[in-house]
Image 1 (cartoon, helix red, strand yellow):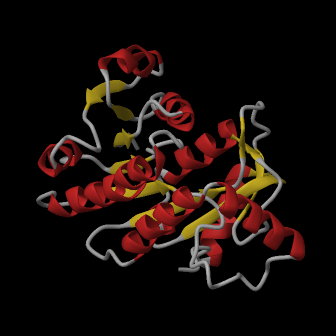
Image 2 (cartoon, rainbow, N blue to C red; image 1 turned 90 degrees about the vertical axis):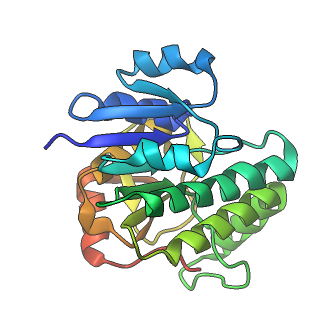
Length: 243
């Protein structure tokens, strides 16, 4: 079944891979901030749309989401501009997208949000974490505290939404190594790293997985074929977002 899909943050490394995968079967629009990025979107066989999470009004996003089946949120400040910009993009930009979906008249698109593993209430250490997980968590949280804080606030906001269906994908550390087509998916440990190719492939699979609604799904490197691992995690029905 061909879907109408729109990607927010379309020029990101994962998003470009995702557009290329989706465009072979679906109609894909990718939102970018500047016209300089449009050629890369077209090279991925998607249609560029210029909007800014920071500057464009909510109404323009809502209009862009009309008649769409799936919205992907894959935007992020990428550590540029300090905490103020991280908050503006990773939190306020995400909330703008959530509100814009809610403002769509009639059938609302599903949302697939790219978050990150270990985004959680800092006071709640998951019971399955090992000492190695806890040490890695502390190290990462100490290195990028603003990112962790504002991604958590965005995810916490999304988890309360009930007017549209949503899924969070929570990958671990990312690499640009070639994808393996395999991973560990579901409540897991914080390592090993995973290739952006494989994250994009799992995101593409989620386009047609309405049964993943309401789930936060962890994703790290592993040995299980992606489709099988994702299917098992969805059937388990256990969210990995421990907000």
